Image (cartoon, rainbow, N blue to C red; front, side, top):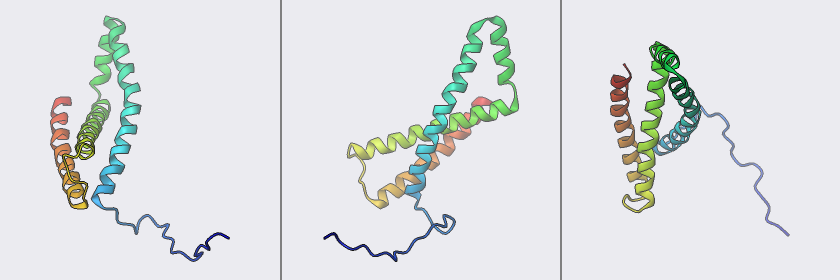
Length: 129
């Protein structure tokens, strides 16, 4: 017959007590920024379509882009793009064997990814505002 499974395994369902390593946080954020960019494509295509529709549409798109909320959203989209790009490059370097696939290297590269993203996010803020 089949193996018996221990039925009284420890189960921790309280996510507030779990401490994720920085590598897990980097991986989760990479997925989240991918979803953000997927949604952002619709917003950006709408603004592009509006601006290309006519001269009045261009002025309307320019008015939309002058709003603080829209600038904040654009800054968020650019920050997500920056993180996703840097994180993607990190994953590709690991996949191609240029970086060791050890926990120490993963931790180091995740922290470097966060640092580069902060710098690019600040530059995006200067660009948007």
